Structure formats: C-alpha cells, structure tokens
Length: 205
Image (cartoon, rainbow, N blue to C red; front, side, top):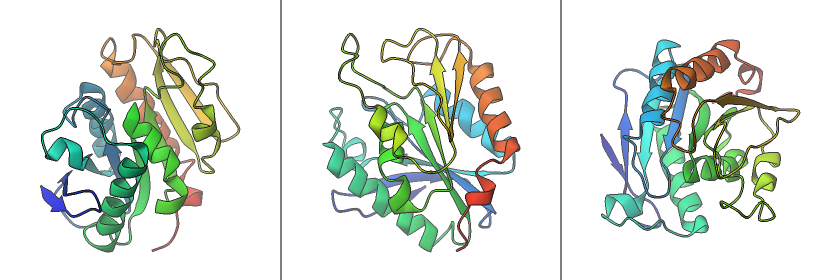
C-alpha cells in the first residue's frame, strides 16, 4: 500500500506487487464507498486473470475519514496527481486503463485525456441523479476519446448510458450496486480486456 501526496491531502493506493506490467488498471471508488466494493473486486479479479496489474485508489477525503465526497475539481486533481505518480514510478512504461465505480467512473472519464488513459472502465456510471433524467452527465462519457466499457445494472435508478462509437455498454442484472450478478461483471470486464480494443491506443511511455 502506498500513500501518495496530492494537492488535497494524501491518497492511498492498494497496488498489486511485482514489476511494472505492460498494462495497468487504476480504479477509483464511489462517492460514499471504498475500494472494498464488491463490483470493484470483481473487476480487479478479471483484470488480474487477464494479466493486468491493478491499483485501487482511495481519495484523500476517504483517507482523512470523511464520508462526504470532495468537490469534483478536487477529486479530479487528486486522481490526476496519483496517476502521474504511479506512471512516474511503479507503473512506469505501463499502458494505463483508468476506471472506477459511480463517482470514480466520472472522475476517470473527466481526466482520461489529462492522464493519457488508453481506455476507460466505468462500473455503474451515474448518468443522472435518480428521478432527474434531465440533469444528464452524458457529456462526461461522450468526451472520452478512447475505448470505454460501461457495466450497468439493468435497474439502475441513475439511468442507462447509451452505447457510442467508442463506448460499449454491458447490461447486467441488478441496480446501482451491481451486486446481483458479480460473475456477469467479471465476465464483461474480462471480455473487454481480452478483446484489447484499447491496446492500439495505448501511449508509449
């Protein structure tokens, strides 16, 4: 486990041991949850089975013991600082896949260009607040210029993102927690990683 300084306090990273791999998946947690979320664990297991190293990032507000999430600009700045530190250190020369669940997925989308991500993985992307489809966040997904996988529960009250030119949407049983069929989450992530649509976009480092 690493503690990494950011502009908004230290973040904590749970990183697989070993040498820098060809590909690394860096995942962030949801607004009110942590890196122990079961869908994050399922995605991490799929990545490891595909030979991809996994780093799970705890945002500074969680490390400080606060439950309420920081503003988006602080989340993005802290995430970017963590990813840059990893790519300059233990993940040097690795192709970066960025992702997360819910709020963490939004952060990964908003910062994909800044971090040089070759692909983005979104678990339970919150397309809009429950009951407010007019307050859409689709622009955050549409702005991602690299291959993206969204794994979404079929009954998610936060909405169902549409597929796009670079975006695949895997619909699984359940709601926003994605707990109803974790095997389906693992299978969707593993299939996307094995297909390697993102690999042609992976930057050299």
